[in-house]
Length: 77
Image 1: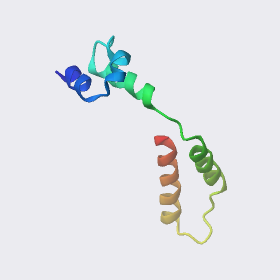
Image 2: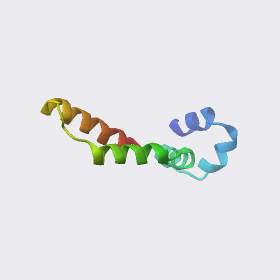
Image 3: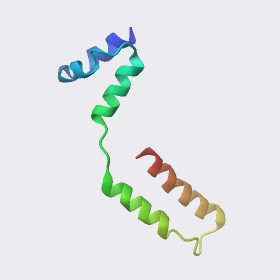
Image 4: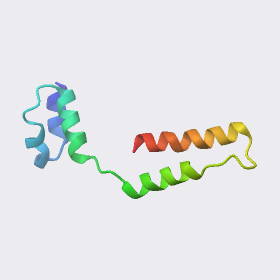
């Protein structure tokens, strides 16, 4: 049922990339790999910002939140 729903909502041009998948998970992974685009400049900028990140006048909690936010964003890239 889920497989047919995926087939019905994707662009017909993508049907061949998921036609041989046996499960919805395989279909999803094929589509994810096909459509994933790395944002290399953004990744580089985040890594540079992380390397240069200093606490400065920020409180520990603020600094930690800022640092974890950048790590989280980098992880999603």
